[in-house]
Image 1 (tube, protein in one colour):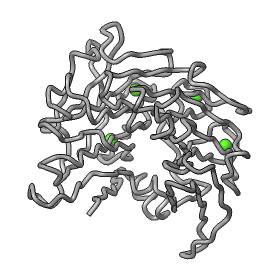
Image 2 (cartoon, helix red, strand yellow; image 1 turned 180 degrees about the vertical axis):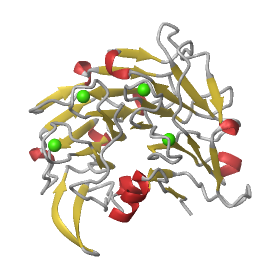
Image 3 (spheres, protein in one colour; image 1 turned 60 degrees about the vertical axis):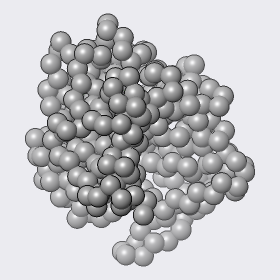
Length: 337
Ligand SMILES: [Ca+2]
Ligand SMILES: [Ca+2]
Ligand SMILES: [Ca+2]
Ligand SMILES: [Ca+2]
Protein backbone atom coordinates (compact mmCIF):
# COMPACT_ATOMS: atom_id res chain seq x y z
CA UNK A 1 0.00 0.00 0.00
CA UNK A 2 1.39 3.35 -0.91
CA UNK A 3 0.07 6.84 -0.46
CA UNK A 4 1.61 9.70 -2.41
CA UNK A 5 4.51 11.76 -1.16
CA UNK A 6 3.54 14.68 1.01
CA UNK A 7 5.52 17.68 -0.14
CA UNK A 8 6.43 18.89 -3.58
CA UNK A 9 10.06 19.66 -4.13
CA UNK A 10 9.14 21.95 -6.93
CA UNK A 11 6.32 24.27 -6.01
CA UNK A 12 4.19 25.64 -8.79
CA UNK A 13 1.27 27.77 -7.87
CA UNK A 14 0.33 29.99 -10.78
CA UNK A 15 -0.99 29.07 -14.17
CA UNK A 16 -1.99 31.64 -16.72
CA UNK A 17 -4.13 30.55 -19.64
CA UNK A 18 -4.33 32.52 -22.80
CA UNK A 19 -6.44 31.34 -25.70
CA UNK A 20 -4.38 33.10 -28.31
CA UNK A 21 -0.88 32.92 -26.90
CA UNK A 22 -0.42 29.92 -24.71
CA UNK A 23 2.01 30.42 -21.89
CA UNK A 24 2.90 28.79 -18.65
CA UNK A 25 4.67 30.37 -15.72
CA UNK A 26 6.40 28.52 -12.93
CA UNK A 27 6.87 30.10 -9.55
CA UNK A 28 8.83 29.03 -6.55
CA UNK A 29 8.52 30.07 -2.95
CA UNK A 30 11.05 31.76 -0.71
CA UNK A 31 9.41 32.49 2.56
CA UNK A 32 6.17 34.21 1.64
CA UNK A 33 7.59 35.70 -1.55
CA UNK A 34 6.85 34.25 -4.94
CA UNK A 35 9.66 34.46 -7.44
CA UNK A 36 9.51 33.45 -11.08
CA UNK A 37 12.01 30.80 -12.03
CA UNK A 38 11.10 30.38 -15.64
CA UNK A 39 8.47 30.71 -18.29
CA UNK A 40 7.46 28.63 -21.21
CA UNK A 41 5.32 29.17 -24.21
CA UNK A 42 3.59 27.09 -26.81
CA UNK A 43 2.24 28.07 -30.18
CA UNK A 44 -0.98 30.03 -30.38
CA UNK A 45 -4.05 27.85 -30.06
CA UNK A 46 -2.27 24.93 -28.46
CA UNK A 47 -3.61 25.90 -25.04
CA UNK A 48 -0.30 24.88 -23.50
CA UNK A 49 -0.81 25.24 -19.74
CA UNK A 50 -4.56 24.58 -19.84
CA UNK A 51 -3.81 22.12 -17.08
CA UNK A 52 -0.59 21.81 -15.09
CA UNK A 53 -0.01 19.36 -12.31
CA UNK A 54 2.31 17.54 -10.01
CA UNK A 55 3.32 14.43 -11.95
CA UNK A 56 4.70 12.40 -9.10
CA UNK A 57 8.24 11.14 -9.54
CA UNK A 58 8.08 9.49 -12.93
CA UNK A 59 11.76 8.51 -13.05
CA UNK A 60 12.14 7.84 -9.32
CA UNK A 61 15.10 10.14 -8.81
CA UNK A 62 15.33 12.81 -6.11
CA UNK A 63 13.06 15.30 -7.87
CA UNK A 64 9.32 15.41 -8.43
CA UNK A 65 8.15 16.11 -11.96
CA UNK A 66 5.60 18.32 -13.72
CA UNK A 67 2.98 17.48 -16.35
CA UNK A 68 1.44 20.12 -18.61
CA UNK A 69 -1.57 19.64 -20.88
CA UNK A 70 -1.95 21.28 -24.29
CA UNK A 71 -5.38 20.07 -25.46
CA UNK A 72 -5.41 22.43 -28.42
CA UNK A 73 -2.76 20.24 -30.01
CA UNK A 74 -3.86 16.99 -28.32
CA UNK A 75 -0.64 16.74 -26.39
CA UNK A 76 0.76 16.68 -22.88
CA UNK A 77 4.34 17.34 -21.84
CA UNK A 78 6.38 15.82 -19.04
CA UNK A 79 9.12 17.91 -17.47
CA UNK A 80 11.50 16.05 -15.20
CA UNK A 81 12.60 17.90 -12.08
CA UNK A 82 14.31 20.07 -11.16
CA UNK A 83 12.11 22.16 -13.45
CA UNK A 84 13.51 25.54 -14.41
CA UNK A 85 11.69 26.20 -17.65
CA UNK A 86 8.50 24.88 -19.18
CA UNK A 87 9.23 25.35 -22.82
CA UNK A 88 7.53 22.51 -24.75
CA UNK A 89 10.66 22.01 -26.82
CA UNK A 90 12.52 21.09 -23.65
CA UNK A 91 10.05 18.51 -22.39
CA UNK A 92 11.46 15.11 -21.55
CA UNK A 93 8.42 13.31 -22.92
CA UNK A 94 5.74 14.46 -25.34
CA UNK A 95 2.52 12.47 -25.10
CA UNK A 96 0.33 12.62 -28.20
CA UNK A 97 -3.36 11.80 -28.43
CA UNK A 98 -6.00 11.21 -31.07
CA UNK A 99 -6.90 14.10 -33.35
CA UNK A 100 -9.68 16.38 -32.08
CA UNK A 101 -9.91 14.46 -28.81
CA UNK A 102 -8.83 17.27 -26.48
CA UNK A 103 -6.15 14.92 -25.18
CA UNK A 104 -4.42 16.82 -22.38
CA UNK A 105 -7.61 18.48 -21.15
CA UNK A 106 -6.96 16.76 -17.83
CA UNK A 107 -3.56 15.59 -16.60
CA UNK A 108 -2.61 14.10 -13.24
CA UNK A 109 -0.30 11.69 -11.59
CA UNK A 110 -1.75 8.20 -11.32
CA UNK A 111 0.85 7.50 -8.64
CA UNK A 112 2.51 4.13 -9.09
CA UNK A 113 -0.24 1.87 -10.41
CA UNK A 114 1.97 -1.04 -11.45
CA UNK A 115 4.15 -1.15 -8.33
CA UNK A 116 7.49 -0.77 -10.09
CA UNK A 117 8.72 2.22 -8.09
CA UNK A 118 8.13 4.75 -10.88
CA UNK A 119 5.11 7.03 -10.71
CA UNK A 120 2.78 6.93 -13.68
CA UNK A 121 0.69 9.61 -15.39
CA UNK A 122 -2.93 9.67 -16.53
CA UNK A 123 -4.13 11.93 -19.33
CA UNK A 124 -7.76 12.52 -20.31
CA UNK A 125 -9.16 13.01 -23.82
CA UNK A 126 -12.83 13.90 -23.20
CA UNK A 127 -13.78 14.45 -26.84
CA UNK A 128 -12.55 10.91 -27.49
CA UNK A 129 -14.20 9.59 -24.31
CA UNK A 130 -10.91 8.04 -23.21
CA UNK A 131 -8.11 8.33 -20.71
CA UNK A 132 -4.61 6.95 -21.01
CA UNK A 133 -2.04 5.83 -18.46
CA UNK A 134 1.64 5.91 -19.32
CA UNK A 135 4.01 4.13 -16.98
CA UNK A 136 7.11 5.82 -15.61
CA UNK A 137 10.64 4.53 -16.12
CA UNK A 138 14.26 5.28 -15.24
CA UNK A 139 14.85 7.45 -18.31
CA UNK A 140 11.58 8.58 -19.88
CA UNK A 141 12.15 10.40 -23.15
CA UNK A 142 10.90 11.03 -26.64
CA UNK A 143 7.37 10.92 -27.96
CA UNK A 144 4.77 8.50 -26.67
CA UNK A 145 1.65 8.13 -28.77
CA UNK A 146 -1.70 7.14 -27.28
CA UNK A 147 -1.60 3.92 -29.28
CA UNK A 148 1.36 2.90 -27.12
CA UNK A 149 -0.27 3.81 -23.80
CA UNK A 150 0.24 1.19 -21.12
CA UNK A 151 -3.41 1.33 -20.10
CA UNK A 152 -6.34 2.66 -22.14
CA UNK A 153 -9.61 3.46 -20.38
CA UNK A 154 -12.72 4.03 -22.50
CA UNK A 155 -16.17 5.39 -21.67
CA UNK A 156 -19.51 5.92 -23.35
CA UNK A 157 -19.71 8.11 -26.45
CA UNK A 158 -20.58 11.69 -25.64
CA UNK A 159 -20.15 11.27 -21.90
CA UNK A 160 -16.98 13.37 -21.89
CA UNK A 161 -15.21 10.50 -20.15
CA UNK A 162 -11.75 11.85 -19.32
CA UNK A 163 -12.95 15.39 -18.60
CA UNK A 164 -11.33 14.84 -15.20
CA UNK A 165 -8.81 12.24 -14.08
CA UNK A 166 -6.81 11.49 -10.96
CA UNK A 167 -4.89 8.94 -8.99
CA UNK A 168 -5.79 8.55 -5.34
CA UNK A 169 -3.27 6.11 -3.97
CA UNK A 170 -4.85 2.91 -2.74
CA UNK A 171 -8.56 3.69 -2.46
CA UNK A 172 -9.75 0.11 -2.18
CA UNK A 173 -7.40 -1.25 0.48
CA UNK A 174 -6.03 -4.08 -1.64
CA UNK A 175 -2.45 -2.84 -1.85
CA UNK A 176 -2.66 -1.54 -5.43
CA UNK A 177 -3.11 2.10 -6.40
CA UNK A 178 -6.33 3.06 -8.14
CA UNK A 179 -7.44 5.81 -10.51
CA UNK A 180 -10.69 7.66 -11.10
CA UNK A 181 -12.04 9.15 -14.33
CA UNK A 182 -14.92 11.62 -14.50
CA UNK A 183 -17.57 11.70 -17.24
CA UNK A 184 -19.72 14.73 -16.29
CA UNK A 185 -22.12 14.38 -19.23
CA UNK A 186 -22.75 10.69 -18.63
CA UNK A 187 -26.48 9.89 -18.61
CA UNK A 188 -26.97 6.14 -19.04
CA UNK A 189 -25.35 4.68 -15.94
CA UNK A 190 -26.32 7.55 -13.69
CA UNK A 191 -29.84 7.43 -15.27
CA UNK A 192 -29.89 11.23 -15.13
CA UNK A 193 -29.50 13.41 -18.21
CA UNK A 194 -26.08 15.04 -18.00
CA UNK A 195 -26.00 13.87 -14.41
CA UNK A 196 -22.46 12.55 -14.65
CA UNK A 197 -20.59 9.53 -13.37
CA UNK A 198 -17.13 9.04 -11.88
CA UNK A 199 -15.57 5.64 -12.49
CA UNK A 200 -13.10 3.94 -10.21
CA UNK A 201 -10.60 1.59 -11.85
CA UNK A 202 -9.16 -0.80 -9.34
CA UNK A 203 -5.82 -2.52 -9.80
CA UNK A 204 -5.58 -0.70 -13.11
CA UNK A 205 -1.86 -1.26 -13.55
CA UNK A 206 -2.35 -4.81 -14.77
CA UNK A 207 -5.26 -4.21 -17.18
CA UNK A 208 -3.91 -3.01 -20.50
CA UNK A 209 -7.32 -1.72 -21.53
CA UNK A 210 -10.61 -1.32 -19.78
CA UNK A 211 -13.90 -0.35 -21.36
CA UNK A 212 -16.54 0.96 -19.01
CA UNK A 213 -19.31 -1.58 -18.70
CA UNK A 214 -17.25 -4.61 -19.62
CA UNK A 215 -18.57 -7.24 -17.19
CA UNK A 216 -15.33 -9.17 -17.34
CA UNK A 217 -13.47 -6.56 -15.41
CA UNK A 218 -13.78 -5.60 -11.79
CA UNK A 219 -13.94 -4.85 -9.02
CA UNK A 220 -14.87 -1.28 -9.68
CA UNK A 221 -17.29 1.30 -8.43
CA UNK A 222 -19.38 3.83 -10.27
CA UNK A 223 -20.06 7.02 -8.35
CA UNK A 224 -23.02 8.80 -9.91
CA UNK A 225 -25.16 11.89 -9.86
CA UNK A 226 -28.52 11.87 -8.12
CA UNK A 227 -30.28 14.38 -10.39
CA UNK A 228 -30.29 15.71 -13.93
CA UNK A 229 -27.64 18.24 -15.00
CA UNK A 230 -25.42 17.91 -11.94
CA UNK A 231 -22.29 17.57 -14.08
CA UNK A 232 -21.07 15.27 -11.36
CA UNK A 233 -17.36 14.64 -12.00
CA UNK A 234 -16.73 17.94 -13.74
CA UNK A 235 -13.74 18.04 -11.39
CA UNK A 236 -12.17 15.31 -9.28
CA UNK A 237 -9.10 15.12 -7.11
CA UNK A 238 -7.22 13.05 -4.66
CA UNK A 239 -8.49 14.44 -1.37
CA UNK A 240 -5.71 13.26 0.90
CA UNK A 241 -6.72 11.02 3.76
CA UNK A 242 -9.60 13.01 5.19
CA UNK A 243 -10.73 10.48 7.77
CA UNK A 244 -7.36 9.24 9.05
CA UNK A 245 -7.74 5.60 8.06
CA UNK A 246 -4.60 5.57 5.83
CA UNK A 247 -6.69 5.07 2.67
CA UNK A 248 -6.72 7.75 -0.02
CA UNK A 249 -10.04 9.57 -0.45
CA UNK A 250 -11.67 11.23 -3.46
CA UNK A 251 -13.31 14.66 -3.78
CA UNK A 252 -15.78 15.22 -6.63
CA UNK A 253 -17.12 18.53 -7.91
CA UNK A 254 -20.61 18.85 -9.40
CA UNK A 255 -21.06 22.51 -10.35
CA UNK A 256 -24.47 21.91 -11.92
CA UNK A 257 -26.12 20.58 -8.76
CA UNK A 258 -29.27 22.44 -7.67
CA UNK A 259 -29.46 24.46 -10.87
CA UNK A 260 -25.83 25.56 -10.79
CA UNK A 261 -25.62 26.22 -7.07
CA UNK A 262 -23.09 23.42 -7.16
CA UNK A 263 -21.84 20.75 -4.80
CA UNK A 264 -18.74 18.82 -3.80
CA UNK A 265 -18.66 15.32 -2.46
CA UNK A 266 -16.04 13.26 -0.66
CA UNK A 267 -15.96 9.50 -0.85
CA UNK A 268 -13.67 7.82 1.61
CA UNK A 269 -11.47 4.99 0.47
CA UNK A 270 -12.88 1.65 1.48
CA UNK A 271 -12.54 -2.03 0.67
CA UNK A 272 -14.29 -2.91 -2.56
CA UNK A 273 -16.16 -6.15 -2.61
CA UNK A 274 -14.51 -8.51 -5.14
CA UNK A 275 -17.83 -9.33 -6.74
CA UNK A 276 -18.43 -5.74 -7.78
CA UNK A 277 -18.43 -5.24 -11.52
CA UNK A 278 -18.21 -2.06 -13.50
CA UNK A 279 -21.86 -1.92 -14.42
CA UNK A 280 -23.41 -3.46 -11.38
CA UNK A 281 -22.30 -1.33 -8.50
CA UNK A 282 -23.23 2.29 -8.16
CA UNK A 283 -23.15 4.74 -5.31
CA UNK A 284 -25.09 7.92 -5.97
CA UNK A 285 -24.31 11.37 -4.66
CA UNK A 286 -26.84 11.17 -1.85
CA UNK A 287 -24.82 8.35 -0.31
CA UNK A 288 -21.40 10.02 -0.39
CA UNK A 289 -19.49 10.14 2.89
CA UNK A 290 -19.33 13.95 2.93
CA UNK A 291 -21.50 16.39 0.98
CA UNK A 292 -20.95 20.13 0.63
CA UNK A 293 -23.18 22.57 -1.22
CA UNK A 294 -22.76 26.09 -2.60
CA UNK A 295 -24.92 28.87 -1.26
CA UNK A 296 -27.75 26.44 -0.78
CA UNK A 297 -30.09 28.21 -3.14
CA UNK A 298 -30.90 27.25 -6.69
CA UNK A 299 -30.54 30.87 -7.80
CA UNK A 300 -26.97 31.40 -6.59
CA UNK A 301 -25.36 30.22 -9.84
CA UNK A 302 -22.17 29.88 -7.83
CA UNK A 303 -21.19 26.63 -9.55
CA UNK A 304 -19.55 25.48 -6.36
CA UNK A 305 -17.35 22.49 -7.22
CA UNK A 306 -16.07 23.93 -10.47
CA UNK A 307 -12.62 22.86 -9.32
CA UNK A 308 -11.52 20.81 -6.34
CA UNK A 309 -8.22 19.82 -4.80
CA UNK A 310 -6.50 18.68 -1.69
CA UNK A 311 -4.98 21.75 -0.06
CA UNK A 312 -1.57 20.19 0.37
CA UNK A 313 -1.63 19.04 -3.26
CA UNK A 314 -1.73 22.70 -4.21
CA UNK A 315 1.59 23.13 -2.45
CA UNK A 316 -0.03 25.68 -0.21
CA UNK A 317 2.12 25.32 2.87
CA UNK A 318 4.09 22.89 4.91
CA UNK A 319 1.61 23.38 7.72
CA UNK A 320 -1.11 22.02 5.49
CA UNK A 321 1.07 19.07 4.53
CA UNK A 322 1.69 18.22 8.13
CA UNK A 323 -2.02 18.40 8.76
CA UNK A 324 -2.65 15.98 5.93
CA UNK A 325 -0.30 13.43 7.40
CA UNK A 326 -2.30 13.41 10.59
CA UNK A 327 -5.29 12.34 8.55
CA UNK A 328 -7.30 15.55 8.63
CA UNK A 329 -6.60 16.73 5.12
CA UNK A 330 -8.22 20.04 4.21
CA UNK A 331 -9.85 20.62 0.85
CA UNK A 332 -10.21 23.56 -1.48
CA UNK A 333 -13.40 23.87 -3.52
CA UNK A 334 -13.90 26.83 -5.84
CA UNK A 335 -16.89 28.54 -7.37
CA UNK A 336 -16.94 30.51 -10.56
CA UNK A 337 -18.79 33.47 -9.07
CA1 LIG B 1 11.75 12.83 -11.08
CA1 LIG C 1 4.78 2.69 -12.17
CA1 LIG D 1 -6.57 -0.47 -4.75
CA1 LIG E 1 -9.22 7.91 4.07
